[in-house]
Image 1 (cartoon, helix red, strand yellow):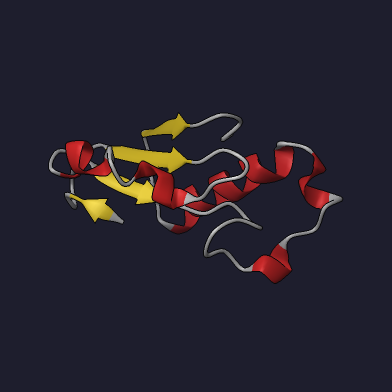
Image 2: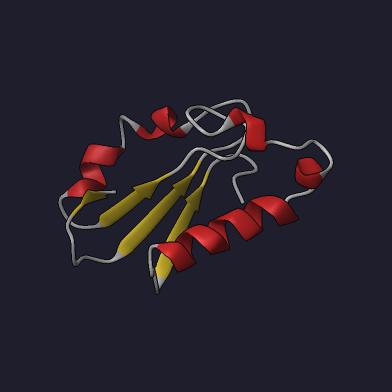
Length: 88
């Protein structure tokens, strides 16, 4: 996580064929006012590549499930999701 500890929460979800690094140029514009969460979807960037299963991730439902799990584990509420391309 980046940014403030108590500000509104922004979760940045990248699209297919990229990773969380794509947000590098815009991140500084948000980090001073928001609590920012960046992630790599399963199978992308620094994620656990062995966790990717083409049958599971053949629809966007699995990506949505991952986002919901992330929010639950980090106890995030009132989240604004910023997605790129087909970032869920």
